[in-house]
Length: 520
Image 1 (cartoon, rainbow, N blue to C red):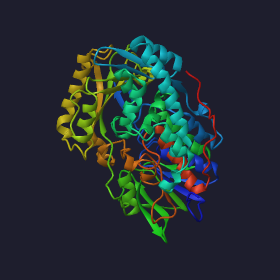
Image 2 (cartoon, helix red, strand yellow):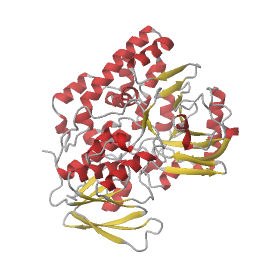
Image 3 (cartoon, one colour):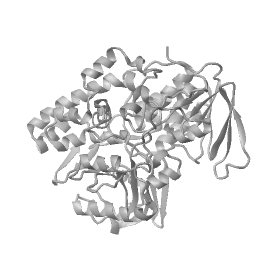
Image 4 (cartoon, rainbow, N blue to C red):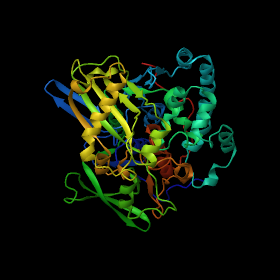
């Protein structure tokens, strides 16, 4: 029997209006709970933040958080809890290609969600043996996803022993407990394809050659489930969830920082909060029957008053340097998402994860949201997002105030030297820009200066990841990327459902065949 919050749970206070908090709110509202959300920012979205870069010609509407949206059926599921439909709240476009990938040898591979289209792409660029291997690997990824989604990813469990059973045997038979890199290599003779279907492990904070094979499920979400983009930018996801929650009866207090929790008899009885711009003045008190905490783990531990004991300290994922740039002219050759791979591979992971150094031959994610929604920039302009994985502040305590501007120039120089269509001579076209470094993430309260939270090492995966129950507080639950099931938009959305289930006692897996938007 999975543990649930005992006692009265009529009024639930949720700390944080990010994707996890808002998804929790919708599931709780659907179960008849009264919900109040307290958010320190002036808008919803959490780490899916927003930044408006204004110029004389107009405004560049920047998404400062995640840019890759997969598994939108999870959004539909959350909205469905209060009787709403995804297509009535968001205008989603399915991207094709989901990614364009460039390699050091000058080759390009477009990554299509459609199996036949991707097989044709692989056959044309890599040959018939690679195409046959792709078909087999796609089948493997699909089986892996089906074996994991409702049990290992989409369920609460209180002990590693809860995993024992036929699902564990099935996952083991699929190679889920082997290493991801070798598993992918079994199917794909071409190293370029191996990178395309394993780089996602970096999202989980582990290099592909050390990640569990089970994390191939992230590649499934990207390359089989599909990549989407909401018109109006990623900020529209948080706004849509928040609007639906308010329409269903939730109260959301923006611009309020939670300053403390009142505790009595092993329960949180009230939340104290104040204006985010002056948290030491005019504290308000909000009584509650249960609480859901969604901030980063160090903030949670400070509010609770203690951190859980662990035999080994938490290890955090690598961080990222992100350049947001508004360009004076459009770059129509550039896809919505582009990955520029350097010649180096395993050495790159070693540099940023083990040695705490910047990549000497970087692989970069470039996002051009104006490829899908030109309205995010002034007329005849483009918005570009360049992300470079880098050490977090624990493994690489670098002086970002000093090296940040130089590294920005270095990254633009790398793109210029590689000569990808549309990605040369960027610097001269930049009208306005903003550089985000691990120092900025740290200043925002994120542990180890990373937006990707605790790494998905074996000791921090599944039942070994920080639990979504708080020891010593019988009515406090966690949601977000630091707890079960983990990092990324789909796991964060699932964490909201799991947190709500701890309160409502409804632990059933979501219904099969959830609605998915049609390609746009």
